[in-house]
Length: 223
Ligand code: DC
Image 1 (tube, rainbow, N blue to C red):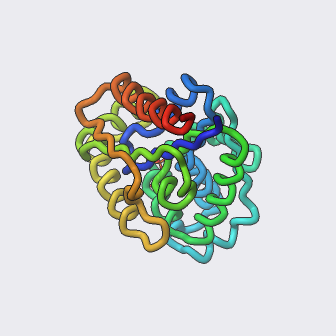
Image 2 (image 1 turned 90 degrees about the vertical axis):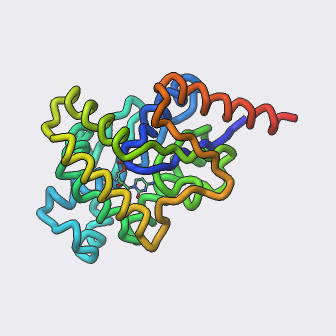
Image 3 (image 1 turned 45 degrees about the horizontal axis):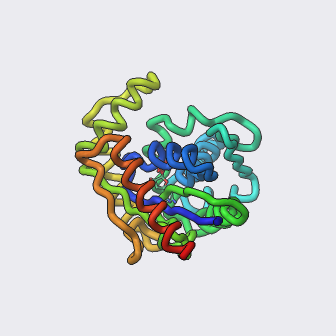
């Protein structure tokens, strides 16, 4: 049975870690939609554009080609940007890019194409509400700001990305504000989503919980 799983939630809630694990366990295609907005932001910064300038950034849509490889590699016009798109300068600008309607429409078009032919698990902000409104399973994954910031801080330390915990708390709060407050396809739970608060859960526990929700849905649909 071909199914789509949407995992939405605020920045650094651990969505991609969980989605990658479940995709690999169940043999689904994992689609990291945040990586697409990050890629677009990287391109704008490379061109020297001001990411707060909607018109200038939207004008380069035809120049940007994004490719997500099954091994997690992200290519922007053929350049490997997998690591570059996780840098603080991208975090600081990506929420602006993600508010621009024309850029969102281009990304959503690509996301829907990628989801058309296989079972997918897609993570983002608007997957259950806008990109895949008919997804069979919709999860809204949350965690407190402090827990999210600490997880991202540790991740950055492991990857050798310089930052302070305090800066990350501010960045997470700022992105929550912009992602939830934008006019077009803002971050919010879909009405038919199931909330999973991971603040006090381990990765294993979250994977088990969401896998259980997916398996129950598959059983229900096979009846
Ligand atoms: O999940 P992430 O941190 O990689 O996402 C980066 C930014 O992209 C985030 O601030 C909000 C935006 N985004 C979005 O608006 N819609 C999505 N479907 C995915 C990400």
